[in-house]
Image (cartoon, rainbow, N blue to C red; front, side, top):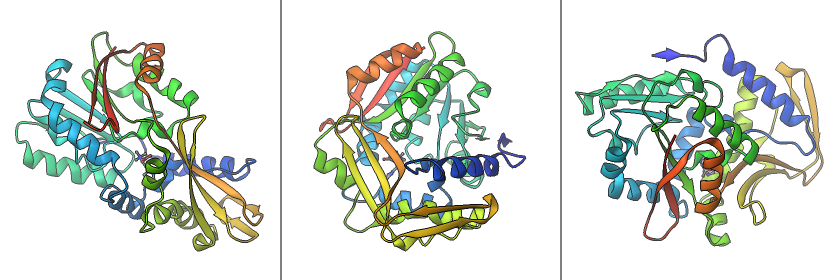
Length: 308
Ligand code: AVJ
């Protein structure tokens, strides 16, 4: 496995993100740090909740259109950014010769590589441990897939940078498959991020457990309430953690003390929702032509196939 995250890279990034976010006004934390083993497990539970439709919808789209997507891509190499457990990817792998899953989590990558090698004996699986926001330049030619709607975690400026950087690594004609959640009824959006069982709330608080463990902080996660809001103007979901009492939090490894007033809200994630026109414009600005737009019958989610 190729690993670009050696030498304390992740640790450095966590330290810098936490310092930046906790000293900002208002405070915020990047969603990247939800995904330790416990957070990945919680996210996997989220994908099975009734309220959380994106994963099921994307899977349905892939079931109907994977063959068409692979044929149109004209490629025998699939590079998947933020591959996670690669659950949905199997549908795109029939007929592929090379699969390169790219993820920050080395443990999941290794397990995935082993599983897929057994399932697709003719496939060469080449896992790369990297941060898709920072290590794009090393990607080989082939179709790039970025599924699940994860691009929605980037704000519009970060998205523009990401898309342009990705485009700069592509040759004309290379395919790019992007999964995006679509704008819809507010109540369904909010429910998807505030489920009745509190799984998303636990997922949200998990970032505090991660910071406690990795940086020796003393957050009391249970003293933060989960908040999910839909911002109509920006068309994105915001997850926040609201301090239910005034508190002082000390982050030992950063030698940093931060104070929360009662009711203070800290943003932990944005999850942008898209429309076809808007996404086509963003893609075009980065140098990608939107070629095919696949949605589920209810129009909840889309896979955008574009060409460099
Ligand atoms: C994994 C980023 C696609 O934004 O819907 C799920 C993460 N956050 N519930 C999303 C998430 C809260 C998810 N992505």
